[in-house]
Amino acid sequence: MQREKEYTTAAADTFDETTSGLLTTLAAFDATTINRAPSNGGWTAGQVGEHLLKSYGIAELLERNAEPAGRPAHEKIEQLKSIFLNFEIKLSSPPDILPSASPKDRDLLLKALSERIRQIRRLTATKDPTGLCAAYELPVMGTLTRLEWIYFAIFHTLRHIRQLQNLMKETGEPGNSRKMPDHMLSAKANH
Image (cartoon, rainbow, N blue to C red; front, side, top):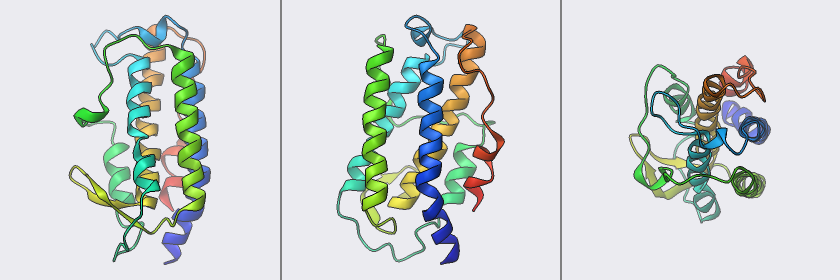
């Protein structure tokens, strides 16, 4: 129970810090480089942003009525962390959150992300984190509690911030080329 309380207490601040880092990193790309494909053929920075925006559709899950979990609300957080922060493996995106091939408007994308982030943040403050969101099953993981969905968003975002930072190096974008802080990868996520 103590561990669940620690995760719950840290969730909002960690989400805020992580998503602030995302917005800062994405804003460092200009109108041209946000749509420049990397040499390895991967996603552009704009596509990474659109993918995260679609993944933040978890707000609808968080908003819905949840069921009693019947297990600790933080039970799957370490498993989520071990998957999403393992940068040695390539993960496949579910089709419904794949980005489109069309060019992205940086400012519109940042605005949409900011709005969705505010919505999720509001829900983290007003909804019971222990409720199970049974309306959707994450591949391999199954159903998650609201608390686990917040950590999913944190770890998933951290993974893509790293991807954006690698894109910055390749495009020569000077904006925000600092490395992801080590504490984002360990301390706060390791309660």
